[in-house]
Length: 325
Image (cartoon, rainbow, N blue to C red; front, side, top):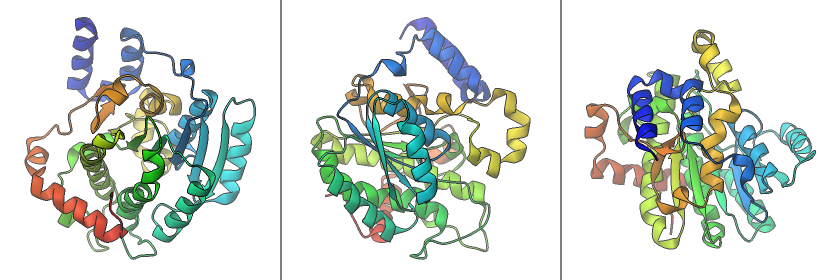
């Protein structure tokens, strides 16, 4: 990157709000002369993506298919997934199929993994995108609070179950779609799973995203020697159905500045498709094709200790019943 581009990026990051809105996307993509996503050739690559029937996941699936990838959608609703797949197949170079699973339901994750492994000997990219901001407390079939079940435990299990297929790829990668909201929350495993008495949907979501980014870094360390890279990213503030449903006031106040679904999904696709920077490092946290700091506050930085990290990993193993080995 040029010194000018670096300077522009630093100004945007310091101001935070412009960085996360469409302003940050527009400025960076022009100043840094991004490689167009349409220029990638992904024929023969298999991409598994959760939560791809709407929003960022759908935008990413559409672009990946446009580049020739074979996309496997993991979705809760079979009827909706089927309709989305039929829509995506129209005029696309790639192919698409779906598997029904709720990422908060560990039994359905196991069944989906069996189906995916029967269809594919190799998985090149696994994208953990599914996850909603739930305003009401609920639990998974296993009794785990639903936010952390769907966005931490379920993805951890799916990763473990598809690990052999990722190992079979010459450029295997795992991508976690997080959120800038994680900057407000420390890593605290004892407070990760909230109860009904103190449940706060926004805090639960941000804590789950903090856990995702930490897991991405830890998985990167563990799987790097095997040739599998792991990254997390956040899409900035994008106008998605999830934002419309869960944060209506925020959306109303920021609507003119929100990113489109395609803009929010850009770094997801770039991390999945580009064989340069995304493969050169692992364990990164990205926004707009640049690696970002994991912390903005001293309080969250101090909480990110080796003991907390090991506790998080042990918690995921215990809740999911699986490990990465």
